Image 1 (tube, rainbow, N blue to C red):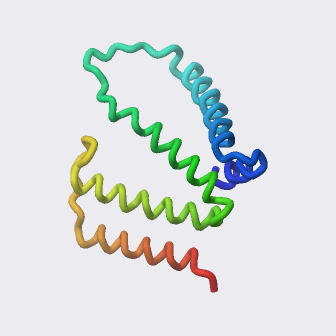
Image 2 (image 1 turned 90 degrees about the vertical axis):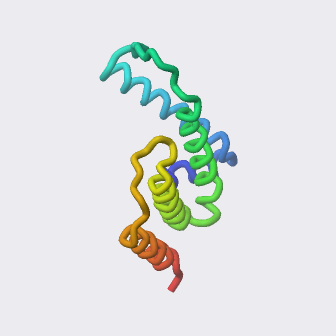
Image 3 (image 1 turned 60 degrees about the vertical axis):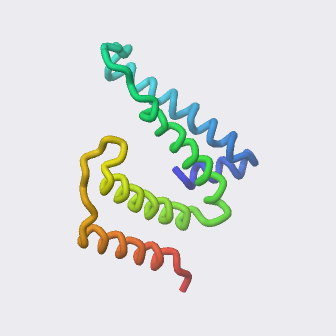
Length: 129
């Protein structure tokens, strides 16, 4: 995805336009899938949905814009491995502090060692020989 959208952004000379195209196509596919598998949604929820649950859309937009702009300049592989490492670190913090209502999974020595090994792996992947 990063390579495709980075290339599209370069050809369109606009990471923002490439991101808009990506989300337009994604919305069409997602809507088609929803209608084909579940039909029109029924909103039977009696309790309001917290507004912060919709922030995922902002994070996705930020990620796609960033990877579309940075990827061609920094290298798609480099950008993806650093995003992966960032996601692992974020996941560990969210789990450890039980943020956003997730089940708490305290940072253990084993998990910390896993993060250190992942960071070392990222370094080895992006290091030029």
